[in-house]
Image: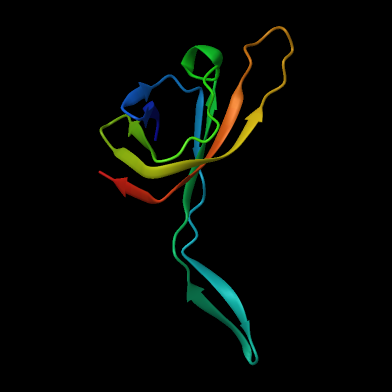
Length: 116
């Protein structure tokens, strides 16, 4: 499914135009070792994603300490995923080669994820 738009809302300020979006895997259960074999236990889901930004779309912004953000991912065809309570975990600056714009990858944790 193709994404038509990703919007980050920070204190009412909308930031759009991200180059890349990738949602983290959502783990629902884990295997555990028992004395007589293995079993499966449910785990609370952890939500997260990464965004790649370029200067004109927010990479020049100071993302340090970003918390309680809302991120809306709009897919073509109308499906929408809303992440709330987002907290920046890590910023990874890309290489600068003099030919392409500086990119920064932002890794986020989200408290909640809702599909509509």
